[in-house]
Image (cartoon, rainbow, N blue to C red; front, side, top):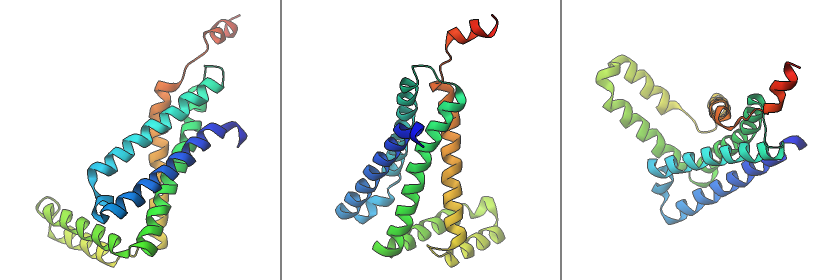
Length: 177
């Protein structure tokens, strides 16, 4: 755990900042928490923070880092950010403003209704019924959200590590010596 001190710190700080941003948006106007543009900006900011954590970790490792180490450090940072955000939103929707979850369900149903022609009536009705019966703190929903957060963290970290990695040129000479 100590070796990933920087990615953990970056993840915790950004997760806290993200929660504060959500609360400020909620106090200004509750509908702003579900604004797609704001959610996109927060997601892009989290990508930047994950990359910065990887670059800082690379600098701590002497300026050179293998893909696996870069990916692992950024994965840790991303997991902290995305899982914390997910758990906060579950808590928020259950205990602070339960109408937000109902509003999200209504938006999802409207989206399915718009796509009814492409998906078909039977599939649309099935999806709408699933959404209507969904509960905020349903165990399977929580697991899906957490595993989704882990998967997104892994994919982001794996791709970003391709750009963050930097091989030590001295290793090439030692390999063939």
